[in-house]
Structures are given as C-alpha cells and as structure tokens.
Image (cartoon, rainbow, N blue to C red; front, side, top):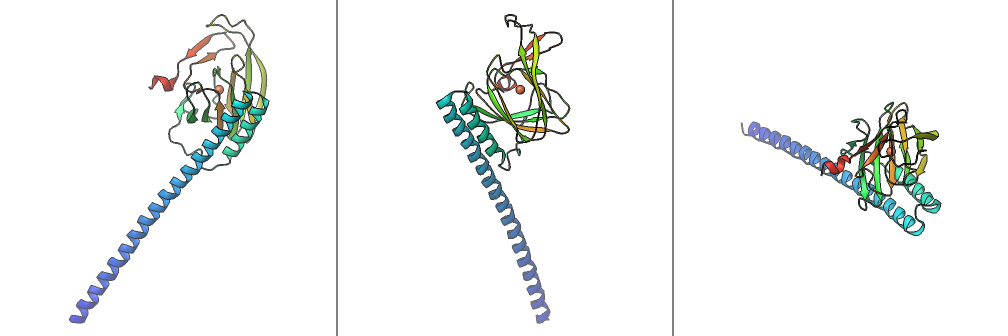
Length: 232
Ligand SMILES: [Fe+2]
C-alpha cells in the first residue's frame, strides 16, 4: 500500500514537473519570440533612421539635385533590403481606395523630409494626381506602370487643367525614379499582375498635404483634403 501511494505520488510529481517544464518552455518561447520581434523592430527603426539621416544630410548639402537624388536612391535601396519593413498594420487607404494604402515610416514635419511605405493594388490605377512636393520612389517588390504628366495650360484656373503624358515606363523591383516639386509632380501609376510595394522619400509629408486629382479627358481638377489631417 505504502509502495503504491509512493509510486502514485512520484508519478504525480513527475507529471507536474513535466507540466512545469513545458509551461516554462512555452513562456520562454513566447518571451524569445517577443524579444526577437523587438529586436527586428529596432533593426528596422535603425535602418529607417539611417535613411532619414542620409537624406537630410544630402538635401542640406545639395538641395534636391542630382548628387542628393543619387544618395537618396542608394539609401532607399539599402533600406529595401531590411526584412520586416512591410509588417506594418497601420497602412491607410490612399487615393480613395481601400486597396492602395500607405503609411508614414518617419517624418521631420509637415513640410520636411518624410519617408512613406505604400502598397499599390494590382490593376487599380491611381487617378492622375500631384503631391505638392518632390520625391524619390523605390520599388520594394512588384511591378508598376508609372506615367508622368505635365500641365500644358497656364495653370491659372484652379478647376481646369490641360495635361499631356510626358513618359510611361514599367518599374520593376529595385528600380527607382524621382520627380521634382510642383508643377513637375503630376503622375499616375498602376501595379502590374500583383501588388507593388514602394518606399517614397518626399520633401514634405505628402500624405498630410492637400493634393489635386486631374481628369485628362475632361480637364476637371479636384482638390483632395488630406485624410490624415482630417483624422486629426
Ligand atoms: Fe503619387
């Protein structure tokens, strides 16, 4: 009887020990996963900060001219190699779409350097639009048909504009392009065959600025108030 009780107690203790070890192991795994995520987030943040620092220095030295544009393109290419950039849950709809989305990764202010991550939905062309600022765009992943437009009217009528296409190209993963400030910032784009993820480093927080939407067929111009500012 004594032996049975003793063996039963030993079994219960052994089971409890196994359960404690298993629980401890689970907790450790969870902690390790959280640490790993924190480490990845820190790594991503350091990479973002480095890109902003490079761009800030280049713009201070050269303005938005070729030497600075080249530095920014290289810095965005470096940033694009970092894993975890796209793991953002806070993308917001862009251009009136719920499928084309963007988020500010870093910003020096409303009218200063701003780094944006955007996801363009496949086969959903953006309207022809401007951003009120210069920018460099780097394709993280996917393909994008990018069309640049220019105003050929005198620009005096805020509600009407005459536009012409100036270029059309397919951007592939790792390609970069840039546009200059108004009135050279008018474009449209559409991802090809799948989503296109892009990094955009701009001279202002272009998600917080008003922008214009153009209908090249009718000449109609609409002004869109910033969604971000409207949200406070
Ligand atoms: Fe745009």
